[in-house]
Image 1 (cartoon, one colour):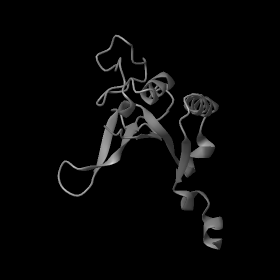
Image 2: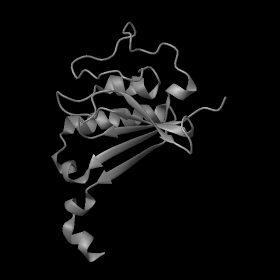
Image 3: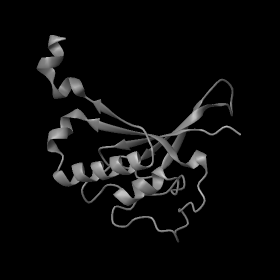
Image 4: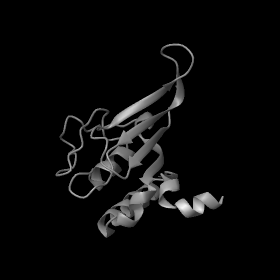
Length: 146
C-alpha cells in the first residue's frame, strides 16, 4: 500500500487550535492525491503550540483532531497520543508559513523555538521550506521596482 506524505504547515500565528489533516480530492468522490496537508497551531508566546507537541506531530504521535494546549504538552498516556505511528502519520516535509510583516516583531524566544523545531526536523531527515506571505506589504518600495 503506497504511503501518503504529510506536509506539515506550521503557521507563525496561533490560528489553528486543532491538529487537522486535509486531503485534496482527485477526480471522483473518495479519490485523493497521494499526499496530505496537516495544519498545526503556530508558535505564539503563551498561546501557541508547544515545541514538544510540534516535534511529536512530526514523528506521527499526534492523532488527527487533537486540540493543542499552550500550557502542557501531549502525554504518552493521553488518548490523542498515537503510540504506533505509521509512515502515513509522520511528517515528510515541514513548511513554515510566516507573515513577512511579523518577522521584525518576532521575539527571540519564538525564533529560538522555531530553530528548535527546524533542528529536530533536520535530525529526522525532514526537508523544510519557508513561505513568506504578504511580502508586498513588507517591502512596498522594493516590490514596486520589480
